[in-house]
Length: 135
Image 1 (spheres, helix red, strand yellow):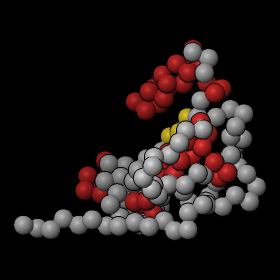
Image 2 (cartoon, rainbow, N blue to C red):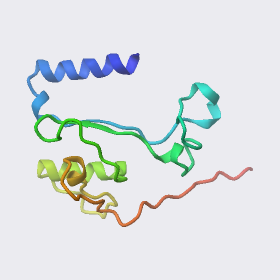
Image 3 (cartoon, rainbow, N blue to C red):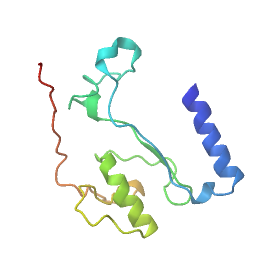
């Protein structure tokens, strides 16, 4: 309920300032729900595991993007992408320069805009599992 209200406030502000047609809105998350909080931390539905794992329930997150006139309404993309790809994509869209140091993200605008035959610019989605050592 809180998220619905908050999103409504953001969208109303964009409309009020007449910038809603020129704003890319992105809703996403970084991981699935915390497993250690039991059944009140969220649900992954039929997927396995959650935050901190590389099973689908931990790394597969829905993302919704909205930009009238730029992202075709009702389009879906099933090609995997990562949040590290958002910075280079927005830099591409705005003409901004990327940082001088090497970054891992890639421009995924062809995926977002529904370009026919668009493929992920990433060769692999590499991850690492950090473990804490008992002391």
